[in-house]
Image 1 (cartoon, rainbow, N blue to C red):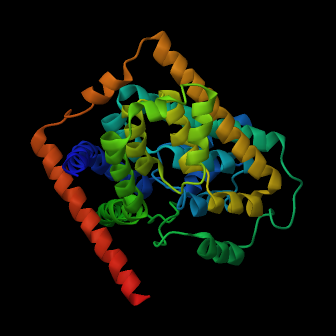
Image 2 (image 1 turned 90 degrees about the horizontal axis):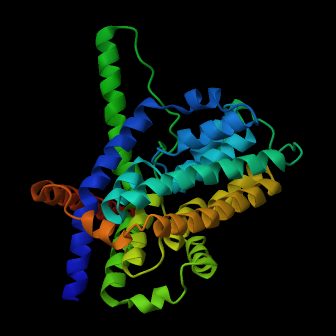
Image 3 (image 1 turned 45 degrees about the horizontal axis):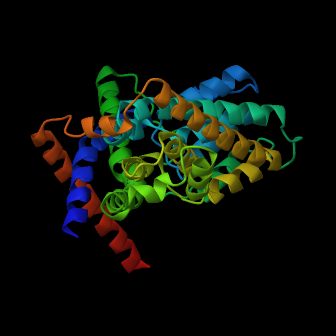
Length: 365
């Protein structure tokens, strides 16, 4: 148990400053990027809108849960089906916070390849949706304002009403009021990041860190490497990742444990792409809002690109002789110890606050 605790503490220490930095960026994005702005660029069923949706969604810090109302807001503000699907894929698969944590726990190579694969996966799913789209039905037609408001309330699976990044404060005409408005928007975004987003992922983050520590402590390398680095290993990781309701950031420590235990980088990448992007809530909303074919094209785009990216990742590692284990070791202790310890204490305080909030909610129920 002492070895388990030591591994958990090391992973916690490595992840804390990068996670906090990612949350700050997440708050800034939420404050100053509105869905109305995005929808203006995403209205056509074409390659340009699909690519824009993938690029717009990639840095946004929304999990598998909170991306649903945001995407539906985009759809009902004029975004096309293909752009909506592209946004739904790229947003939970990567984000500013998960990229930062990936760099800390997985090393620079995986931190770069992960968002690239996520964007390609999103574009693929969007283009497939464009090509194999359903005929218009009453369920998929644009809705009235009152219907939009009603659906927004019922489709949100997050505790906070601020899941959708479209609720932005307007700037006032007076310069002093503008400064106050900007500050309020900044604070609103930071509260959204450090309370709403963090609470959505805190439980899975702890589970991921614990599983990663347990993998390092007890799982022999031969158990995972027996699957090899080919299709079988990727298929196993896809089957493990698809039913997991987990966000990109929380999946990262699990991926780190898998890499450290000897699983191939390509198979780990498949897990990180399939896990955050696929869950029953997302697929159910896609079927209702976009049609049955969109569900098939969504899964086809995500999984096909995940497997192709996995093979490409393994090929790049072999061709350039990239030492993933060395990168994992080098990614540790990149920052001053005082910053890592301070960040770990702040992260621990956030987790304690999250735990108290959960207990209060259960007591009320």
